[in-house]
Image (cartoon, rainbow over all chains, first blue to last red; front, side, top):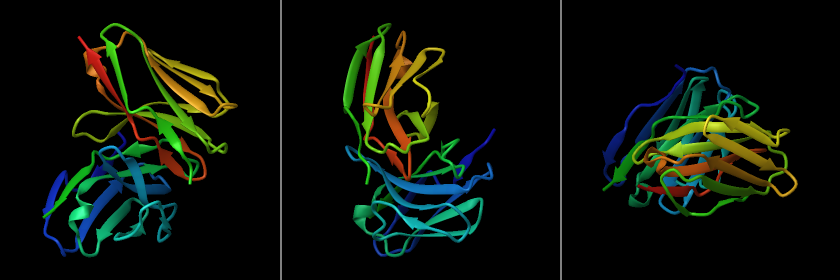
Length: 112
Length: 108
């Protein structure tokens, strides 16, 4: 069964901490994405990547960075976590043409 | 960026049909998707339609695409309480955009 796996289901971090959210896919997909989901705002794209070492900003990249050193792994980094980054974070992957768009089960991050 | 719009809430009685609507603005879409999200879970792919199709049926699900009006709909026949969830449409044109989600409540 093909999968997108996010390393943590729940995470609690302190303000100012550096936070890494990891995502791994086993479908050999070119595209990988990070979204955050907040009530009433739907899914908002933070960053996406269409190839190793390539990244593009989404709608809300401020306060985030990403890393894609290997095709199967896409990491989201919060350099200095803030309380307004408390959210559900969803990773997804797809082929270059946008086929087979698959989500991970999400990481609920709370920054205190 | 693109706008993908959905109504926020829909309530139906068990056994009735549900129709969830979505409008989008990017005309370069190749695929359009419907996802289901149950409480506390990630997004589960329900179905998708290729942009050169008008309709796709998959068991209780029917997807209709009107490219001229940029309108996508998802019909769920014989809606069950287990269908209660948030439903997202997604447009994978030049970028990847999701609607705000429609919260479907099924009343027993």
